[in-house]
Length: 94
Image (tube, rainbow, N blue to C red; front, side):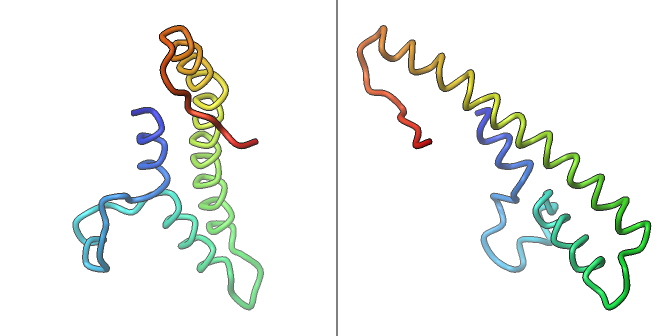
């Protein structure tokens, strides 16, 4: 559930077609793409584009830190519990 929450904050997982963006709000990845489009002009990015980038990047960093916390803590605790109960593990590639 924690991983799904992080994923859903970063990506709109419910949108399956081009029209779904009308029914489901955009998420951080789409907001970052919008900031990129606004800043990717012939001139230097405006102050508002820089501010928008910082806002979106800070929110993405929060989600990445949540993900790292889940990977470092929750998965380790889960695997410990699984070993104690002698059932299969979730193995991570490093």
